[in-house]
Length: 386
Ligand SMILES: Cc1cc2nc3c(=O)[nH]c(=O)nc-3n(C[C@H](O)[C@H](O)[C@H](O)COP(=O)(O)O)c2cc1C
Image 1 (cartoon, rainbow, N blue to C red):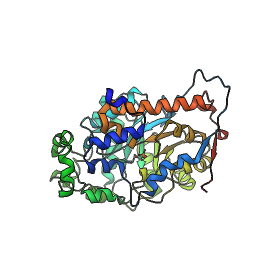
Image 2: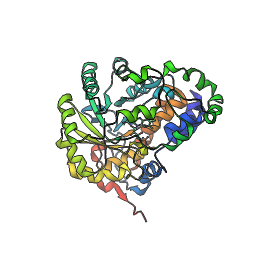
Image 3: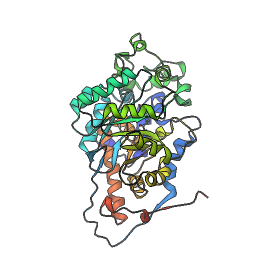
Image 4: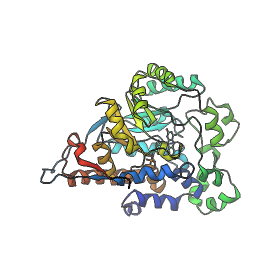
C-alpha cells in the first residue's frame, strides 16, 4: 500500500493514525495518566543512553533469534496486550496477530480485547500470550486459565499495575465510553471521520469478547469503560495471589508491571518465570520511572535465567538494542503497533513491525554486533541526567 510506505518511522504512523481516527479514539491510544510525565519519560529516557560501537567486525550476517515465554521470537520483540482493538480498526486483534505471525513475533492478547481468545488461537499459529488479571471474581480468572490451556496459549502475563484505573484526563475530557458516547464535544470529531464512525459506532461491534458472558451489567447495554474496569480491580491482591495463579497455570508466567528489583525477586519466588518491566505505557502511576532505567538493576537482582522484558517507550529499533545491552531478554510494544493498526489495519501493523525490524538490524550492523548474544554492557553508556 503506497500510503503506508510513506511512513518512515513510528512517529509517521502516529500522525497517520491521528488523521484517521476521531480525536477521542486517538487520544485513548496516545494518552497517559495525569500530566503524562511518565508517558513522555518512557520514550525520552532512551536518549540518555549512548550506543558505543565496535568497528571492523564481520557483520555480513547477524543473528537475532531469541526466546520469550519459552517461545521462539525472530528478534527480541513482542506485541504487548492492548484492549479494545476494534475501536481502532474493524479487523482488530486478528489483524495484529496475523502481522505478528508474519514477523515471527509473540503476540499478547488482552483480557479486554475485542476478540475471543479461542478465535484468536484458531487464527494465529504463532506464540501467543494471554494477559490476565486476578479479578475480584476469582472464578472468572480460573476460567480464563482453563480456557487458555484448552486453546493452546503458551504463556500468561499477569497485569498488576491496575489496582485502580489511572486518571486519563484526555478520556475524561472526551467523554470516552464503550461504545463511544456522543458528547457534544466529541460529536464533531466523529462526524469529521465518517469512514471510521459509521461502522464503528454500532454497539454490537464493541464487546469485551472474553468477559461479556460473565459481566451481567454489560448485557444490559453500554457502560462506561471506567465503571467496568474499576468494578473488577481488586485492591486486596498480594504475592499470595500470584502463587495461586502460578500453581493454577503451571506454565510460563510473567508479571507485567514490576518496576523494582525487590518485586522482581518476589515475582520469581511466587512462581513466575519472568517479569515485564512496565508502567502500563504511562497510563497508570504518573511519576513512575521509565522501564528502560529499571532494566539493569532488575537483571542484576534476577541473574541470567528469568525473562526480563522492557515494556514501554520503544519507538526505534535501536531502543531494543539498548535494552538488550542493559540486560533485557527483549522488549514489548503497545502504541507503535496500534498506530499502525489505526493507520492501515493489518498492513499498517506490518509496516510498524517492518520499520522497527529494519532499524534494529541496521543498529546491530552499525554497532558492530553480529549476534544478540554478543551484546555487552560495554556497548551502552548512560548519560547523566544533568
Ligand atoms: C490503547 C492501549 C490499551 C492498553 N490495554 C491494555 C490492557 O488491556 N492490558 C494491559 O495489561 N495493558 C494494556 N496496555 C498497556 C500495554 O500493554 C503496554 O504496557 C504499553 O502500551 C507499553 O507502552 P508503549 O505504548 O509505549 O509501547 C494498553 C496500552 C494502550 C496504549
